[in-house]
Length: 57
Image 1: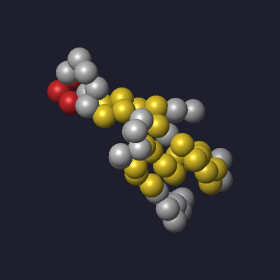
Image 2: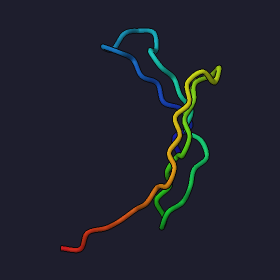
Image 3: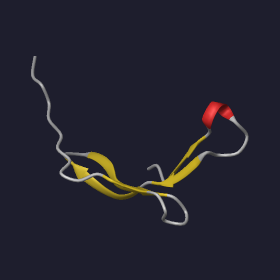
Image 4: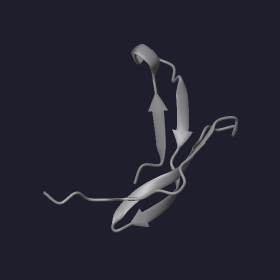
Protein backbone atom coordinates (compact mmCIF):
# COMPACT_ATOMS: atom_id res chain seq x y z
CA UNK A 1 0.00 0.00 0.00
CA UNK A 2 1.30 3.44 -0.88
CA UNK A 3 1.50 5.71 2.19
CA UNK A 4 3.30 8.77 0.77
CA UNK A 5 4.13 10.22 -2.65
CA UNK A 6 7.07 12.56 -3.35
CA UNK A 7 7.17 14.74 -6.47
CA UNK A 8 10.46 16.31 -7.57
CA UNK A 9 10.04 18.84 -10.38
CA UNK A 10 12.76 18.30 -13.03
CA UNK A 11 14.36 15.73 -10.70
CA UNK A 12 15.57 18.47 -8.34
CA UNK A 13 17.13 17.36 -5.01
CA UNK A 14 14.41 18.88 -2.79
CA UNK A 15 10.82 17.59 -3.08
CA UNK A 16 8.35 19.96 -4.77
CA UNK A 17 5.36 18.25 -3.14
CA UNK A 18 4.94 15.41 -0.65
CA UNK A 19 1.47 14.00 -0.03
CA UNK A 20 -0.07 11.17 1.95
CA UNK A 21 -2.31 8.47 0.52
CA UNK A 22 -5.18 7.96 2.96
CA UNK A 23 -8.73 6.70 3.39
CA UNK A 24 -8.39 3.69 1.13
CA UNK A 25 -11.61 2.24 -0.21
CA UNK A 26 -11.90 -1.26 -1.63
CA UNK A 27 -13.96 -1.54 -4.80
CA UNK A 28 -14.17 -5.14 -6.00
CA UNK A 29 -10.63 -5.84 -4.76
CA UNK A 30 -9.15 -2.61 -6.16
CA UNK A 31 -7.86 -0.39 -3.33
CA UNK A 32 -8.00 3.34 -4.09
CA UNK A 33 -6.87 6.19 -1.81
CA UNK A 34 -9.68 8.74 -1.55
CA UNK A 35 -7.63 11.49 0.14
CA UNK A 36 -4.17 13.00 -0.28
CA UNK A 37 -2.70 15.88 1.74
CA UNK A 38 0.59 17.54 2.52
CA UNK A 39 2.16 17.61 5.98
CA UNK A 40 0.65 20.90 7.18
CA UNK A 41 -2.77 20.27 5.59
CA UNK A 42 -2.60 23.31 3.30
CA UNK A 43 -3.03 21.04 0.26
CA UNK A 44 -5.80 18.42 0.19
CA UNK A 45 -7.06 16.39 -2.73
CA UNK A 46 -10.24 14.33 -2.31
CA UNK A 47 -11.80 11.80 -4.63
CA UNK A 48 -15.53 11.12 -4.24
CA UNK A 49 -18.12 9.05 -6.07
CA UNK A 50 -15.46 6.64 -7.32
CA UNK A 51 -16.75 3.96 -9.67
CA UNK A 52 -15.00 1.04 -11.30
CA UNK A 53 -16.36 -0.22 -14.59
CA UNK A 54 -15.17 -2.84 -17.01
CA UNK A 55 -15.66 -3.11 -20.72
CA UNK A 56 -16.35 -6.52 -22.15
CA UNK A 57 -14.92 -7.03 -25.65
